[in-house]
Image (cartoon, rainbow, N blue to C red; front, top):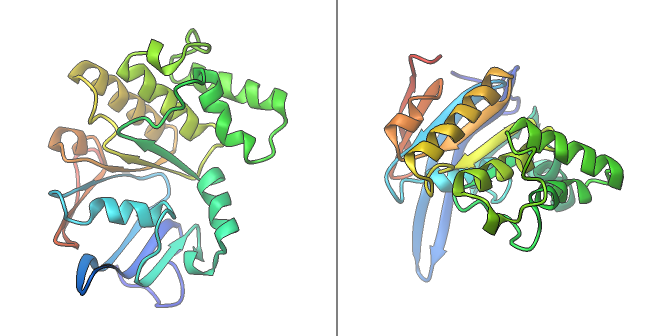
Length: 239
């Protein structure tokens, strides 16, 4: 998988070249990522694995435009991310990327409907259209009958479904999920993984960080990190 230092590979939503991330801690340097290079194609389902401190979450933060690399290049949708301003990056995070986190990150005082409407408030969608799209997203994840429930009134699996609906509502180009089943019981976790399977079949690009082999096995491709480097990149039986 070689490509030009100045051009992304065609048909890939993500291309990174020699990506490194160094954190300065006093007089010491922590190398979280070391010269990582890879491509992720549109419509693919990728699992990222590795022990604690391996760099996988740092890598996901960079892909999600939440952090910038110390060196190297990242192309998202064919353009160098380093060329974007902070305002442009905020728009990308809001409209092109859907985030799903282990801890749900829902607003406790808002209903399921209000939580899903939130990303559209920052993208100029008219109020009535916000409600229509949020209801459709919640119905798509099986929560059409929980629109006016607050997170405290929902199970863990239902809260994660709200988070997924929120991630989907702006029709993003890619979904980044960080341990999305980490706080769920096995039955709820299975229902969330089945939902991700359905989203992938519908054509969504999914990049998921997980430490669980059975979760990673649902993906088309498993990338393993150790000490900030990719040590294995394998297609699965699902590909």
